[in-house]
Image (cartoon, rainbow, N blue to C red; front, top):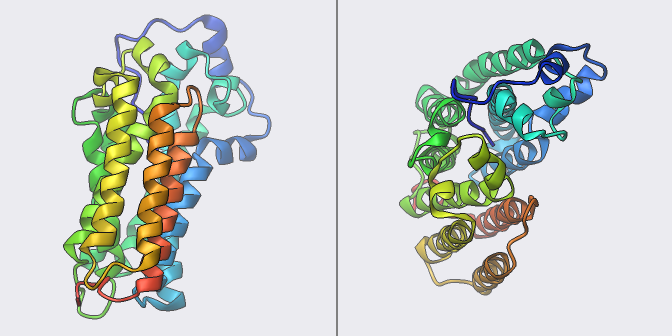
Amino acid sequence: MPRARAEATDPPLPASAAAAAIGPPPGAVTGLLRACHPVPAAAVTLLAAVLAAAVGRGPHGAALVAAAVGTGQLSVGWCNDRVDLGRDLVAGRQDKPLVRGGLRPAAVTAAALTALLLCVPLSLAGGRLAGCAHLCGVAAAWAYNLRLKSTAVSWLPYALAFGLLPAFVTLGLPGAPWPPWWLTAAAALLGAGAHFANVLPDIEDDLATGVSGLPHRIGARASAVVGGILVLASAVALVAGAPGRVPAYGWVLLAATAAAVLLGVLRPAARSRIPFLATMAVAGGDVVLLVVRGAGLAGRA
């Protein structure tokens, strides 16, 4: 997910670190793959494609959704690492290809812009309204990277980007139907929860380099609690909001989500991506539930 840019108030970079950032780029392709945040990018892309298939977009429509979401995610991931280079150098983030000197900043900039340019026609190919919905979500993610990460509304781009994803999928159907409110609410709540979970492993480094989003302002423990509540609320909206009686697997999803949230709150994993990956796993369970239920996903119920 996107990270904030280095501000003018960041500490000066050591000469050795600056040299590493512009040094020769061995393994540039591998570096680009690692810099795009491949796990969340692949997860969001796969979830969108499965949701597209669930609402009846067909193989071609699902592939188009995957291509648009995939390029959008790539652009956001590369933008993330590029604008956060200064902070990552100060924090000594050796897990970042740009910090290790294996990738040129200009290459990441070019990759991010190229992916963004490809995302525009791919998004609009599903329809003007659908494309605008997706591009608004991508724009929100870029805004997070460039500025909003260090504000009290740092959660808003996540909620907006995730919340618009079902609209991108359903608006590509004949008649351009909007998704039902409960699906949009579940996606937005999940996105906001993902923000809190994604920040937890880096919260100390972020604070040391001047990042002050909402999770940083309320602290790690409170962020774990808030993130867990948001993810659980997402599951509740999805299970209880859909028309008809709650099926057995809906209750199973709620129980599993509650257990995962409780575990994350009681035993927060410092320096670990487990909370964020658990959130993506909950999202996967949500999509499976949607596929099984199958009806009412495009505002028809």
